[in-house]
Length: 160
Image (cartoon, rainbow, N blue to C red; front, side, top):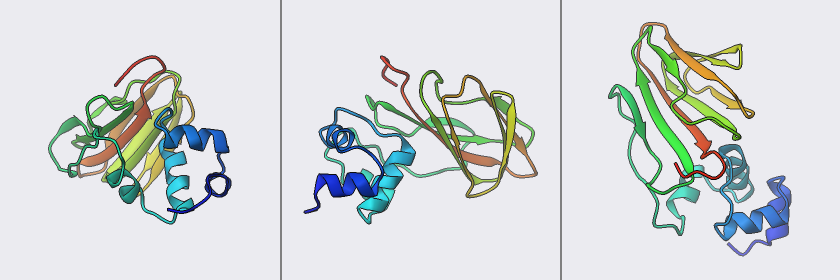
């Protein structure tokens, strides 16, 4: 894009070395870091992901089909899961926890998410960033299905 690495890194509040390792594919940024990079480059997250040089790009759509479905490409170091559940249903995080942050986005419905004993209520469009959680549970509240997106890096030393 003709931008200097140092300028983009400063605008995204990451180090130049870290940005370089992301650019080379040696590091996988968290979703919040990816969002800051998109903003710094004046691009949407979809544009960044769509123009990725990797062949491990997954495309799909959000559906109302019940259950959890993997959305990340096979072999990706990111865990991205779409979860749809009925009112009253509850369960554990659909991504593996362990030494990594977790990002939850609620697309539709209402969800309560318990993170290490603290409960957060999410409505449509809400997002929750969990800093290295040890335990996560969710429960659908309200009268409609909850459609959520969960994202985390694979725990260190493991592929998702």
